[in-house]
Length: 150
Image (cartoon, rainbow, N blue to C red; front, top):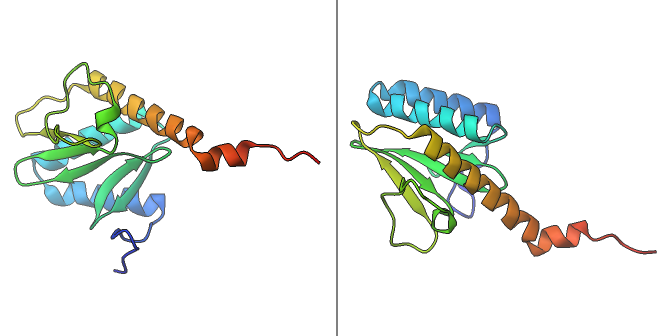
């Protein structure tokens, strides 16, 4: 498949991406698929207008005014990586991976871990709000919102 300049695959329609995520969950056939499915539902409950995408070799990505988080599956964990996690408040201490970076933070979910749905929803909503604020503060957004006087 052809790659874009940033290394991702070209954008598929939201329906195609959702179907591909469904297929990925089904093909896992173990706790990782169940966990990814539960996390996906929490994401949709927290941010109903979220857009599902596939990037970087088929990685599920959830976006709202920019990337909220990705959902990667490994042999021993499901990893939710928040694009701007370092800027988010995490009072429930959900972030447990990639803590040393200046931008991203991640949540590694092991097979025996329980998912704190309320805390995860709060974090997802904060991430969506962060993206919206960042987008509205961008020079491009400010330029587009200015009216031209005749």
